[in-house]
Length: 326
Image (cartoon, rainbow, N blue to C red; front, side):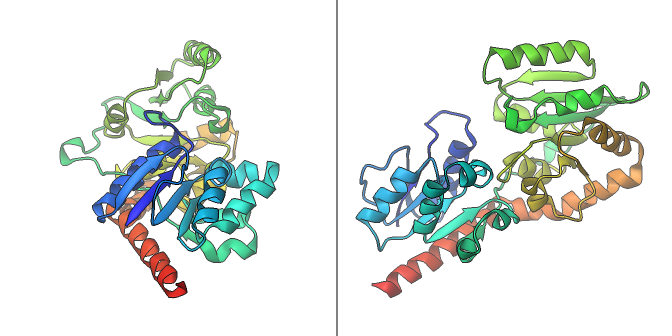
């Protein structure tokens, strides 16, 4: 089947939409499909379209359905679709969702943000990650309890919350925080350097290649994700399959991946609460073990073969419906 993936993110960018598009294209090619990725839809021939982002890909969505009303259309919902544009641009965003034959979301709680009329279109497909090889089994650095933060410097990521939390740690703590993420402009870089000088435990490493991030998973004891909003962050998947427990802000995007019964949450924006969780993880073996066991139990759900099978099942159901309607 010829599949066209439309994404608002251009080639060679580190935008999450582009990364998802490239990964999905690889999985779909493994299933035997002919897949192309484009930023704009210019009536390229296709048997099915997957559009990333209901709002930002709205033009392509409307154009495809106008030209091919009987062909399957999948709209993959971005975090800003459900957290921002449903409120700020409801007409455009909802029109895209309504035109879709199927909606793909990345965590289990997105349904709470959508009209009930769209729930029957929803398909949860967790983003996968490749497990570390045996030679990269996590080996903590001796003498330290290292924590990583993986996230670009953008307001929605609340990127410096772990740095602020480090100022509330006791002097006896062995915690060091390593932050990997690209600054969006010079002001973010300046602030990161300022916080490094203010909080000696905090180390900002800037934007690095993905392989370097994977190396960090093999060294760290814990990952912090402090975002204000998420559509289902792939760094959670990566940490889980790398056997790295997570301390996460209590937003739907994190709870929808880790579960409501997970013990590693802190209140959004609460660096004191985050610091308490970090101290517990460092010093309370029972608490750390509970996080570790929970994450290990979830890890198989985020393997590439599961994501590939989920896409295969969805496309099979859509093509059957399309055949029956002809």
